[in-house]
Image (cartoon, rainbow, N blue to C red; front, side):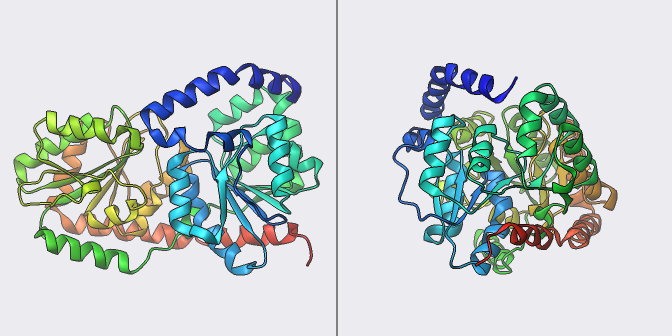
Length: 424
């Protein structure tokens, strides 16, 4: 399939795309807002000639934050435009940067929408986070002479096989990229095999290792725990959970309560549309549950705190003693393990970590990642770590060591971007 056929199929799929958007808006009303932006209509006022960064959803927005901060500091004369595709990503971007950046949804990869977007923005450099590859957007930049960078790029074996099935579309698209800053050597080789130009591929590492934690975050967390009278309570977090995981986590927590009656679980679903369902699940299963979003007080008898807010996951991690990272008990591929590691938390996850294989391997080998497959195993690990705090401390120290050993990717990426910016 080439780009013309791809565009035709995309146009034929428009009714289904629109229906899916309506369905998602029914589940999460935020999807029903700013729909015109998704087709390059009703875009906000945008200053031209700057740097455009695309971070598709919440995870990529978090990963892009250190890069955006550095670009704002280095190039105050250039407007920075950050696009995404999800309401959670949009809210996080606006919460982090406010009026310091320009923001809108990225229009769908329709040729006419891409052209309208490019004509409105006219960037001097485009940066796409991770592996969000849109053939028409990339081609629209290429036609205008705008360098496109794939930053913090990752490509699993499974994804590479999928792209390889559409070689007539994938190879020309990759050839139009000016820089592919990959996380590992293995991923560099996969991009080469798919048709990327060798001279454009650089192994820079993952900028996720370069995250910085506000030193006041643990201080505020300790103050809140003291306010709750929970400084000594066993407290753990299960974050970014997906459907099918909450039942397992609650079953493990029920067993833990048999040994530690004062144990508190902070349960944070990945998607806002699941907040209400997970709250009802907790209540239906008999757990004394309070909601973070309405600031319900955490009392001695509280067993579950539902993290149904946006933009404060790092703070919720800081509150806990141990961190389970979701999207890993089901075949979703896992989520960012480095945020809780940076906060000095022992890490737990399920076995499905294919989106973070290299990071997971390093953390596992260092001793700061324990994988579990079910409620029994999760409970066993929780019981062990709460009974042996020195083991938990050792795990946390190992995770911080992995972070320190891998930092520097952001500087390498910025060096590549600076080469591509026009001289001023």
